[in-house]
Length: 90
Image (tube, rainbow, N blue to C red; front, side):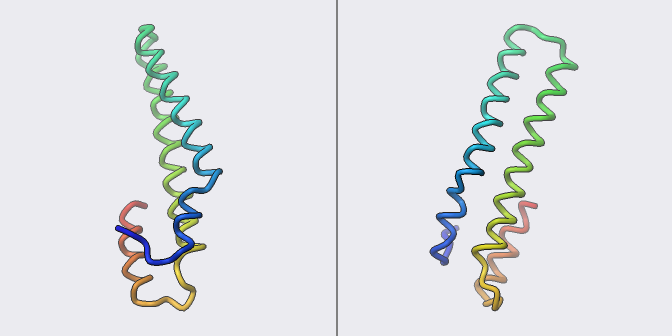
């Protein structure tokens, strides 16, 4: 769903968010390597949990940033609709 505020593109392209996701991507590649090298399942599951947590934290940071910087403080009807839409992902 396109965002009506100009600020959304800059906050969604946050260098911190990109860096966080790139770390998660690297971690996931490492887990794939563990699977290919037949590491113990418990070790793999633990690392997958860490990747999942990293992605969940990135998603929460994105949503909170959006709420802090992109939604109008006056609380327009469009912002209320958008807040409800993005809150589904919390």
